[in-house]
Structures are given as C-alpha cells and as structure tokens.
Image (cartoon, rainbow, N blue to C red):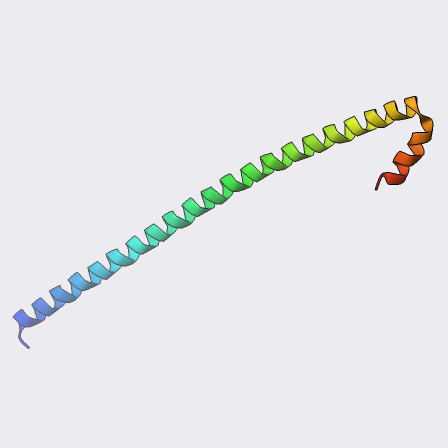
Length: 91
C-alpha cells in the first residue's frame, strides 16, 4: 500500500467516523428532546389531576357542611328522626 492509498483510506475512515459521531449525537439529542417533552406532558397531567383533586375536596367539604345543616334542620323538626339518621350514617 502506498501513501496515496493510505491517505484515501484514512480519509474514508475519518468520514465514516465523523458520520457515526454525528448520528450518535443526533440520536442523543433527539432522545433527550423526546424525554423532555414526555416529562413536560406528565407534569401537566399531574398539575391537572392535582387541580381536580382540590376541586373534589372542596365539593366534599361543601356536601358535608350541607349534610350537617340538613341534619340540624331534621332534628329541629322531628328529634325522633335523628336516631334514624344516626343509624344509617356510616363513619
């Protein structure tokens, strides 16, 4: 093998090596981009679920408050019914 063939072979190997390095870097960059987008989507979902949970808690608190008020009204009207309500309530 003479110097010209060696130079050509080295140039080809360098080109292939550079192409492989570019492909690997591109894959890493794209993989990081995909993971970042997935993480952002999961965070948005978690935030939305947290908001839904807060809304459910607030509704439950209002329902419990209304139930207490209704039980108060019921006992004011007919105290005998209070024992029936207490029997049917589950704590």
